[in-house]
Each structure stands twice: as structure tokens, then as C-alpha cells.
Length: 168
Length: 303
Image (cartoon, rainbow over all chains, first blue to last red; front, side, top):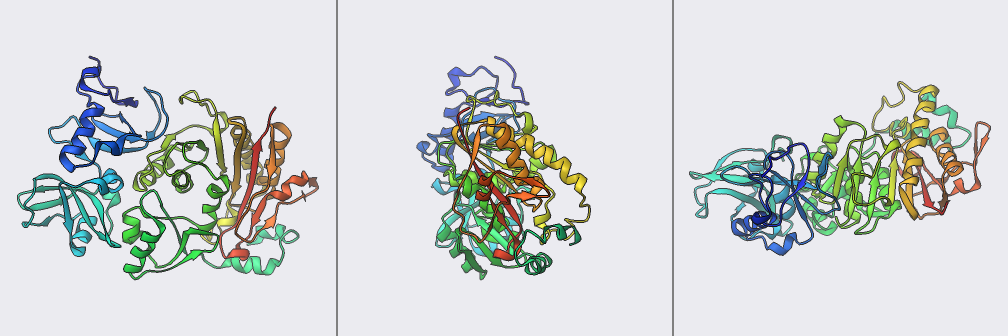
């Protein structure tokens, strides 16, 4: 097993058995995670590839590329691995969260506003799983994902990155 | 406004042109169809009490009546992106198709690159390049906010661009939205003409020629290259295309444009241009109440 080179994009191995870099997640594990945690159907990702650049930072990409690749970015960051609890990104959740059926917490408009502004809030009525949840609210007649939140001890902490927070 | 006097002989109704340049621009956004339909986005705007008007030439371009277009739900969700109306024209003229390989040679901050991805249903490869590392972060931020998964972002000089890093050796289409003297952005940046001088125009046109030539070389035979600037200076527009026609295998082709415009020039300051340059488009601020713009569409031909 070799070490991860944080300066280049490496395509994830299809399965753990094909892993050549220590600690690297496999494509199968990433897709399983999105299905197990959020109920996102695996076929959602049929036309996408997954890559690691930086320690544990996973990127999802729809275009053509060969591995390894030393450029600035491909597609978008979607998941942080190499830590106990994997953490999806807010941008990924806004892009693919509409396919989720589990661990989606639906917020009222004022709660959504606080979430978008990066505020933590007490939401003790939630009786689902703790951990990372997809926060969503109703927009023009459909549920629209806002971003990723961390739910612990009756509190939903907004994980919307500072640069993405807005006072709406 | 004094530098613009040199265009008095080539612009119809020059006083209306000057008057338009004095007026500030309104807020325009592009609906990002990677994240949602035009219909739903308009419904979300209406639910928020934001008045809007769709552009006649493109239903995805929407004028908003709000002072803070960045603090709306549609912006937070990446359903809309602040983009000047004329700046949404070049990707439409390039007309990329799903699955293609497309190069945006000067892509930051990414409004047009993400529009290319949207026009391709976010399928295919949009190589979004910029030589300015500082501006790459804005490009990456916008790409992720708008959910464009088909973008590959590179940081290189477009004039000597290498495709070696990719598993293909030519593009189907290329957009050269070149760095320029930005005269046409005067309504958005009132100080756009403060440092205007002919020396700058001359040096930037050299860069533009280098980038456009590289774009033609990097595009397959039969492929399309669109050249655009947000300036009026013929030295940066017709003269750059003429130089490329003289040195590379390509021709200027017609295109439809739903906006009022004037044809490209056939001569300027003693230099004459190929008749085909009349197929290029000059968009002046008083014609559609927008910023100023220049566009030419090229087809790559056999050597």
C-alpha cells in the first residue's frame, strides 16, 4: 500500500479489494454510504466517477479524465472521508439531495432562514437518526435541499460553509 | 467617456450610445438549469415577491427588480446566478451539445463555463481554464454552488495550452472570452475607462491573438470557436479575428442572435478586414439596454 498524495486527483478504486493507497475509500463504499445513510439510489451515480485529492476529500465528476491528474479541480467536492463519521458537503447535498429519502429534516421557512445564515437551532421534535442530516425546505411546491446539518442532543447545527451562508 | 469618442464614426445614433453608457445597469440573473427548471425558479422568485422579466431572446436570462439579487432563495440554492445579459450570449452562440469536449480558455469567475455545462445538461467535459490563480477560487466556488459536475478546472496560460493532461487531444468547441480593455462594462464599472490608453489596447490585442490562435489549433476540424470581448475597440475584435484567419485554418460563419446588433467592421483606422467579418456582431449598450459586446463565430477547416 502506498500513501495518499494530496496534490493530485486519484480515481477511487472500484472496491476495497482493489485498493492500493492506504485508507482510501472505494467507489463502492461511497455509493453504499449515500444509499445506507440517505437512501440515494446507487444508479444516481452510474455516469459519475469519484476521486480523492487532499486527505479524505472525495470529488464527484461527470467528465473525462485519466488518473492521476494534477489540475485545480474536477466536478465538485462531495464527501469527507478518513474520519469516523463521513461528512457530505453542502454543495453536494444541494445538487443530489433531491434523491434522498432518509435523514432529511424538513424545516419551516424561518428555520430554513436560520440554517442558511449558519445558525444552530434547537429542534427537539426530530426523532430520526443523530449525525449528519440533509436539511430541506419547501420551495415552489417541492422539497429543496438547503445543505448539510449535524444533529446532536436536540440541536441542529448548520454546516453551511461561511462563504455560502446568506441572510435571506 | 472621452475615449469612446473614437467610435463616433462607426456607431449609429452616437448620442443615444453615450447616454446609455452613462446609465447604470439593472440586475440580471441566469437561471441555472443544472439545478432546476426555469418554470420552478420563476415560481420561487414570485413566491418571494421578487418582480422579474424574462429576456425576449433567452428565457433563461431574467431581469430582477431587487437590490440584493445574491440574498434570495434562488441564489442560495444555486438556481440563479448573477450574470450580465450580454455575458450570457457567447455560450448560446457556441451551442455546445451534451457529451462534447469544450474548452473555456479564460473561464474565471465561471459564469460562462457553468452556462456551457448547463447547456450540455452537465454531461460531457467543460475544461474551464484561467491563467490567474487568484480568480480560480471564484471559478471553483461558482462551479460548486451551481452544481456543475462536468467542469475540469485548470490554471495555465491559454496561449500555450497543453491537452496532455486529458485523455483526448482536441476539443469539439472552444470559447475565447478574452481579457480585454472592458470598455463595454462602463455601465457596471464606472471607472472602466480611467486607465484607458492605446498602448494597453495594443498589448492586450497581442494576448488575444495568441489565445484565439491556440483555440483554433486545439479544436477539431469542423468544430466551432467563439471569440468574444466586452469592448468596442476594433483592434481587440475584428483585427484579432483577421489575424487568426490569416494564420490558422478557419472561417467566420453566420449565427442567429435574438438581440439587436450591428455587423462587424470592414475597416478601421486604415486597416481593411475580410468581408466575412461582417458576420461578426457588435452589441452596443443603447440597442438592448445592456453592456457592450463583440462576438465572432469561427468554424475550424481542413489545413
